[in-house]
Image (spheres, rainbow, N blue to C red):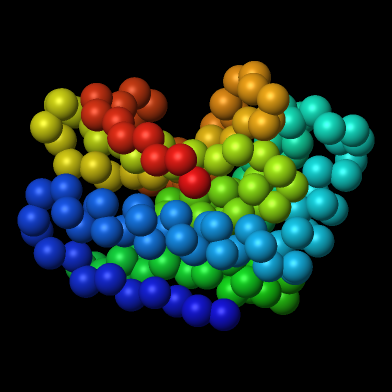
Length: 170
């Protein structure tokens, strides 16, 4: 169980790029963990069958029930690995993490049951605005709609429309 710590310099998009690539690695690594697979399977089981859209919606509902938004310490980006997040949820019932951690967990849970995952990194206000938020989208490997897993935006009181986006396949 690990926590990654990244100092955030003020160098344009570089810190975001570094953070997202680290997140991608944590999500992939987490998706292979046997406990992640067991949790993800239990989440999607009520949907029965192989409908990826229903599975993605069940993951989102589970995340909304078990995650609460909490900012990182000022000037620091903390990234919590999937086993640590799931252990916290198993012990307490809920966990307090930021959008990065919610995105990592959503991607890992989706990938653990065979869904495709991607991160949407967004900025608000103008096309040159800094990236301020990230969330995961999941979908069936056969295609279909991407299902948004964004369970922290409302707690952060962020706008609903992004002016700048960057998509990263997980």
